[in-house]
Image 1 (cartoon, rainbow, N blue to C red):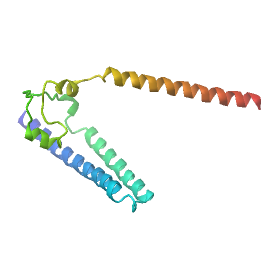
Image 2: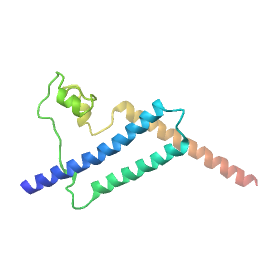
Image 3: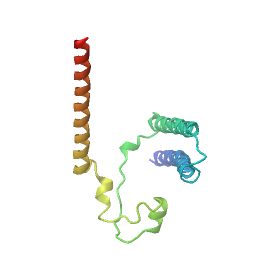
Length: 146
């Protein structure tokens, strides 16, 4: 068991370093777009997105590598809930999660989307299907008229 724990720790450290590199490049692009928007050309942005795509693919390949422990087989559960601000948690999450409280934990442990989001997604899917049907109908009518 000790060997497996050590392997998992190494995998997570490597994964975190890859994610931090990816995140740093995203932040660099955002900074450039916000502060140097007059000097940014489109080809640079497209090149940056190509690098993003490559990094994302590398991260996904890393996660699917067969010799790595399957991270989906592990559960992450909070050991303690506290409504007060946790400075370590805030620092680790870059102030996105200031406290692990009773209000926020259900959102993190949710396995199904919120009903409002699910409803909106169904509306968008329905709208897309209707649009596709109209496009095919118009295309078919034009081909019949020719």
